[in-house]
Image (tube, rainbow, N blue to C red):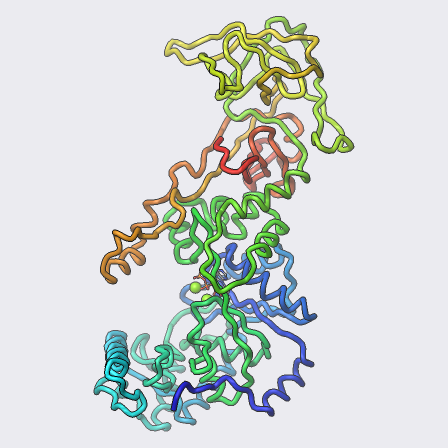
Length: 582
Ligand code: ATP
Ligand code: MG
Ligand code: MG
């Protein structure tokens, strides 16, 4: 006896499989509907759908809905919408719960084969037995003993393991009829307690949950586990390549439970292959953590533009093409994968640079009275895109009062400052030069307005050192939301070496969620309530999420879902340059 290999298909099963698929590739993307999809799922989909398409194969979208306690219709709807938003077209949309009937029959078959039993051990007892099995493994390894010939310590086996088939059939039937209470028993697989793969130690296949299920119409009160369900449904759907993230590696090993179960039931065995999870700096992706952020109100919802959920990215203004390009550049490997946020940002920035028209807005307005203005408005022609003259121009009005950013004025000038200062001349972008000739302060000493003169001959001339964006008095009022990193550290929750405590403490930190939540960036959202937008923005303010544009010198923006013609709301998608702080 050595490493058992349960992964080999018999020729009969292979023939059946080929008959069903015609030899086509079949993959699946199997999200659990217990949250919204995020950029990590985009990576998995890019691979699952991409690899099948490459060989003219099919990809199922399969809702892995075996835990009704965590699953909701809201999540199912959001997942469907995100999958199609990214451009993926599932061959079929299925639910693991579609197969609950068949899965139940397989369980009965396993009981009859003597490969499953009803167990009444409480959680703590199961944990204690598993501890004994771990010690057994260590004992054999240290003393160079064969695991297969050394007797198991007493208590390592569940006392219910050797029940008769008749008892098991009756008890399982009772479980499914609601005779037994939640937690009082489960159906366990009779695996291999000597295996060095811990998931072979009699995994739970069914547990009791008196819980409504968002999809299955039947009123079940027992539900199959992920481990029991996943391989069986892969096989039923004739998935040829079952692609997963690395945490499933040992469970899908040739001597692990995935193949053990298919072998026990004499079913077709897909090829399994694992790749690394994607993580992104300054953010979190696990659904548990996302759920905490949402339910504790640290963000406005699953589609908060600071989250890397697909709905969050969409609302932020990301395009499917930029996300798919990010996935394709990241590639698929088995190495630890922490991607830099800048990479993702670069993908959207590069796309928007050419694609978007230019607009003006002033976020923190400071008014300037132009002393020598002739009255009315002087038209200033501004190109829609400086690189592409064929995209035309629009006219902004240079009025007797104009506005610049407060940050673009300093009472005391210095060589590194490109803004306006007393006595200094700057260019209003595409317009005239103005020279600051005076300023007004309030009682507290804060600057409330400036005075300037303009040079009527400067239009189109060589600009002075500073060029500023501006607004005329025909502006539209709007709200502008400027986003930054959600966390202030690259890897939230990561402990530095000196802090690494005993396992127990580490677990507490992980589960209590204390550590990482204190690392939220307090400035991840800055709202400018009274921004001044150029008049053209009003035309798109009533159609959220459809347009993107550059606000010159400020970044790339889109129209938020909260926006309306009456009250425009803009989101900053990304800065103009890497790490330029606004
Ligand atoms: P989480 O821990 O965030 O809940 P999960 O793996 O439980 O993630 P599922 O909904 O079960 O989430 O995932 C569906 C598919 O997407 C699985 O095949 C999983 O391997 C893959 N996946 C999930 N997260 C990532 C990630 N960060 N990077 C790449 N693939 C991922
Ligand atoms: Mg999962
Ligand atoms: Mg999960």
